[in-house]
Amino acid sequence: MAGIRTLHWDYGQSGIVATVAHERPHEGRAEEHFLPSGPFAILPLKGNRSSLVWTEPTREAERLVASDDMVFELELEQRFGHKLGALTVEGPKKAFPLGLTLAREFVRPRIALAGDAAHGIHPIAGQGLNLGFKDAAALAETVVDAERRGLDIGALDVLEGYQRWRRFDTLQMGITTDVLNRLFSNDNSVLRMARSFGLSLVDRAPALKDFFIGQAAGLTKGPSPRLLRGEAI
Ligand SMILES: Cc1cc2nc3c(=O)[nH]c(=O)nc-3n(C[C@H](O)[C@H](O)[C@H](O)COP(=O)(O)OP(=O)(O)OC[C@H]3O[C@@H](n4cnc5c(N)ncnc54)[C@H](O)[C@@H]3O)c2cc1C
Image 1: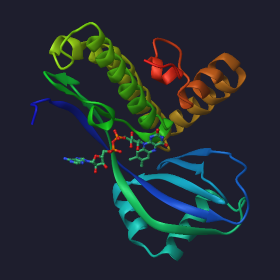
Image 2: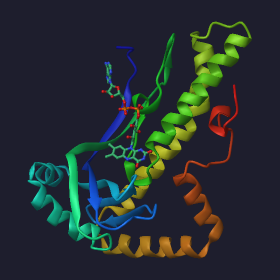
Image 3: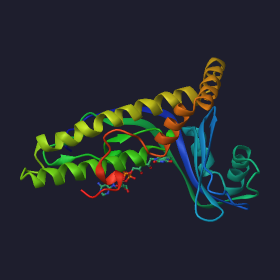
Image 4: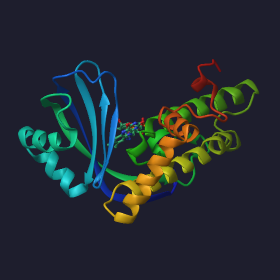
């Protein structure tokens, strides 16, 4: 409706999301396995439960979510393993088509896009929600700052300050997740060698490892909005 165009491509993959109860405690540990069909992540929830983000080609994902829980649990066990004991699916299982979507502009007069309205990225690095939190914090700071200076908070030049602040980070994360997905979600033997070399390199270089852990935890350096640093605006 605002006439903002987007850059979009589809990955042909869907992310299956479900909650799984297991016999043994996960001890707060998250795991991600890079399988040829795409990443398979197990994220700890309260109690003996975990949330799944399981990537498959879209048609296979649709077959899996349409199957009954017993068939789904059998397929799940092959990927999840037996380390947490028997698995039971809790509640609905759903598949979301995955793609990269970047709005060409984040702002128009009196309009600002934030979160997935501005950018949708592959969940391979678990960064989508963090990007949205950063947008919300940067937008709040931009607007409060303009209000204090007596400016019109919805004026294009004020909102463009928010766009400049967030655009590079968003584009960088969009490209990073796109490259990671291309590198990891396949069974090509050359890429298999490249990624095992890449991963062992990361394991041997603590600074590089800290960078990736920091990115995954949303603890990046640089001009982060004050609300994100726990400071009042
Ligand atoms: C499979 C999958 C796994 C993911 N895993 C992770 C992860 O591990 N870590 C992470 O950080 N991120 C992850 N993400 C990304 C994360 O879910 C999103 O980045 C985040 O939910 C975006 O939040 P949002 O509020 O911007 O948008 P949304 O969560 O999409 O919320 C928008 C809301 O607006 C509603 N809405 C839309 N149009 C209208 C309208 N016209 N009127 C009223 N309401 C409307 C929608 O129904 C929706 O409830 C994942 C995404 C997917 C698909």
